[in-house]
Image (cartoon, rainbow, N blue to C red; front, side):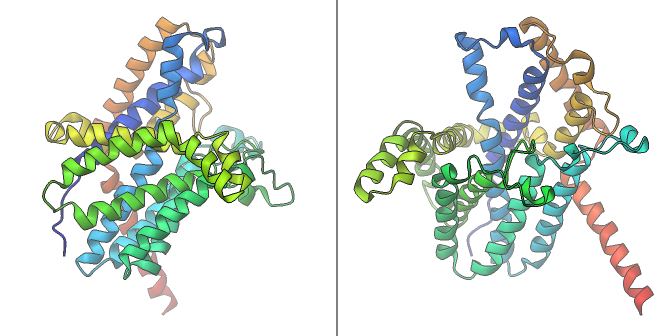
Length: 370
């Protein structure tokens, strides 16, 4: 059995992604549209790096979750981890929906379809549940598991032109919103499941080889080289593949190739943080990485007014100039992290106690039924 190694760089990457999300959402929501100048270098740099945030979240979620599943299976006891994974996935879906609730509006009898909009938490939650299913099917065949995950990621990305403008008008909105943005969903399962699948694939490589000599050096080189190739060469490769196979889908994917190129950005980010891992241990950035769920929830409440409808967006929507919005974003990140550190428990603590509460409810139900 491979030696269990904690991957500290994962928490560092998660911390970077959550901080990028905080400032990205704050600036995007509150900056005056007249300052959205695509000819401005600073704005373009900010916009480009903001686009890395979601791919990083999905990829790192698939990586860490599947890595922990593999570790548990190697120890001969993955059932608790599977149970926890399913519970976590369902919890993320419930939280994702709840953050769209406006209690005051509901009390007044006003309901709208905004509640059914799908965001990042629902997509990650569903991705985790699907990864549990794949792990259960292929856990005894780890190399086949790797192939399936890699293939799934490629299919999700390459087939993006086929579902890009999907509408699903005849499908109930509750289900359709997971597959189409026509009703206002911010994220959809496709193509974002692809990032989780690639993250899970990376975890299988780490699990099998992380204990080997020079693994870190080789992996870092691989992250940078493959990342570079995905960013700059994936489109030419897809076009060449289309010419060879006469499959038009490859060319269609190449002509709007943000998925593979963003994955390349993520891999380069992994390489940077994995290279600096020894300097990050015991640092505050790791603590931020352990608080991603609570930070996400707090920022949603403060910025968008979850539950009450009273958030910063209500009062400052698209009204700030660049100086104001930059200073505000810094203050916003500090405030959200402060609340998360001192007033909210860690993600693990929350999952543990919610799981215990669920087990107690099941116990009471069994006693009542008997």
